[in-house]
Image (tube, helix red, strand yellow):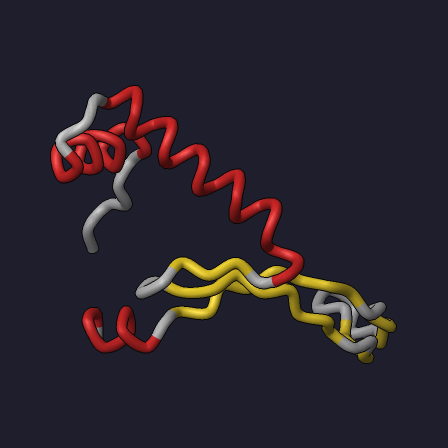
Length: 92
């Protein structure tokens, strides 16, 4: 399995593809991340890649794997990334 790309590698590829400096590419990447953080609670979409969504999980009963005791797991909100169909088709 191939290693994940580092931020530096991603910035280098963005700079080359957009014919911009690496500083500009870093600014673009950081701006995109900041927008995703701000917009995540309303659903942040990157067209062609996917969408960040907040999902509410219900309270449920679980089991402690070490002791086998039944425990109550409280309701909570979690952040999920839903892959776009175009991305799935391109990869799979």
